[in-house]
Image (tube, rainbow, N blue to C red; front, side):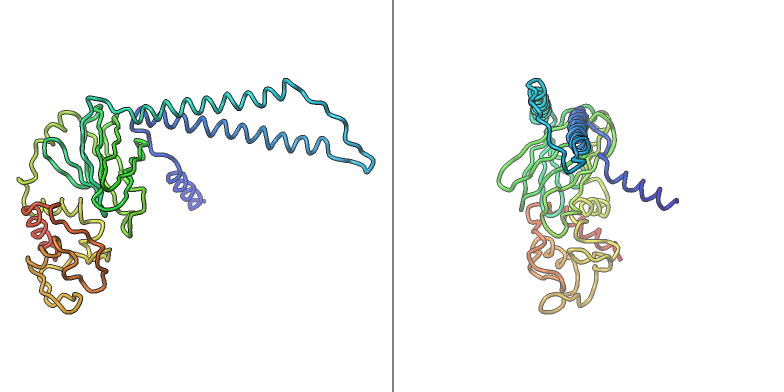
Length: 318
């Protein structure tokens, strides 16, 4: 029986919404519960009534005749008026929750979000940038101003019950006010290519004091390899593994220093110049077995010192 309970537990864990992280998420859940309950009651009344009358008035002998049944004005009024009231309640409630979701607070902390294959970048007004992780203070409204560098993506935080398409060539916006400290998962919900399912990020909600300390930290003070590892985790992890596993791009494990690395039309020795060219001009010398045009260029997306830090990190992966 243990396997049965384990299966049921897994199914339960994967089918229910994660705990609500905002007040709007709770409002969303309440509305959703109302829709489910009224739909269930309506289903029971409709299907149950149909079965009841089918059995009650079933023809029992060949001589049975259908009795004359007159109408009931009160009953006809009720079965029209009650659904009308329920639909109006659903519409009004849904409009109120939607209005709350789209009303951006004026004192919100603004964070710019950029989606691209297959990562999320975050930029604060202070100039601090992160990739794969957004840090915000608890109890502070946060407004996300979002754009895309390549194709259509969709920014989704299940615990906040918020989702918004991210469109190339225009800005879209979203906001939330996290009530609890913790980590919240971000997904892309618009299929955008092979590694779409690995286009993940975290929203880390921290106390105000911790946020103020974090926003002043400077990654430039980190050792180069640690800084490179952070860049890999935010921008490169979806395609390039560091443990030998195959992804959309070649693994970085054992790549540094390789002699005669196979590329289209020949081989190459993997040194700093090859790695730098692969980052800035990814289609110049494609590794054998990987298609052209999949990896976007990071020209302009990475600073020169970030490229250097990334290369130093690759050197450690032997």
